[in-house]
Image 1 (cartoon, chains in turn cyan, red):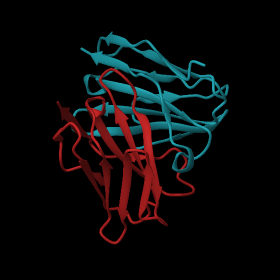
Image 2 (cartoon, one colour; image 1 turned 90 degrees about the vertical axis):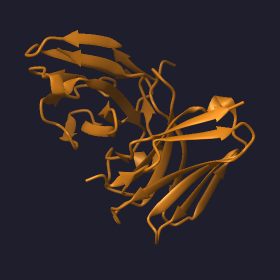
Image 3 (cartoon, chains in turn brown, green; image 1 turned 30 degrees about the vertical axis):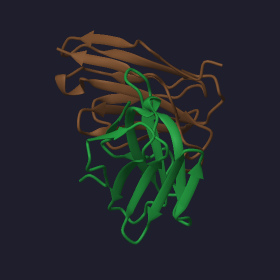
Image 4 (cartoon, one colour; image 1 turned 180 degrees about the vertical axis):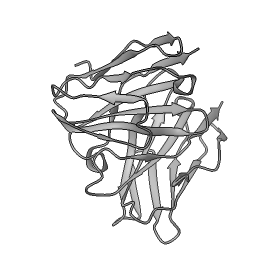
Length: 114
Length: 114
């Protein structure tokens, strides 16, 4: 049982490049989310999904796109990377609303935009 | 506007003593509160939670106290162990309808010394 798997673990991008951060879970969780962690800022919600085909914006969605075509996968796309997107990105999943079930987090992707 | 605040960035405690981590919130819509623990280069892991209808919840060495009138919660770890050294995040959510919208604090680095 792998839990929540994020790839890659590290990535360096040049400003303006695009890339996709992958997230997959094998727990049949309906709820999935993407957070970013910056020094002194805690974790901030980027986008979330409450099921396949359903996504919505979180607190800091600008510059990111998501889609949820399957229950298992929830990729995060950076369309045109900017230095402000340098951060550690965490994907998380849950059976239901996190107030009741909590999150299972992946181990993170450390992204540097130069 | 930081809706969940952890005002102590760090805390140092001797092994065997009590660790008390504090968290304040401003949004009266929050009904459910969670604590996560994070080791370096890993994702956060769920530790313990409490709903607003309770003022205390225990799980082994970990106890969370909630003072709803003061909008304050605390995590007590007794006795503290070296393996407890990590960053602890407080998070909050509406009980229902919150989807994945956990709001996190900025974290407290706990160091348990021998």
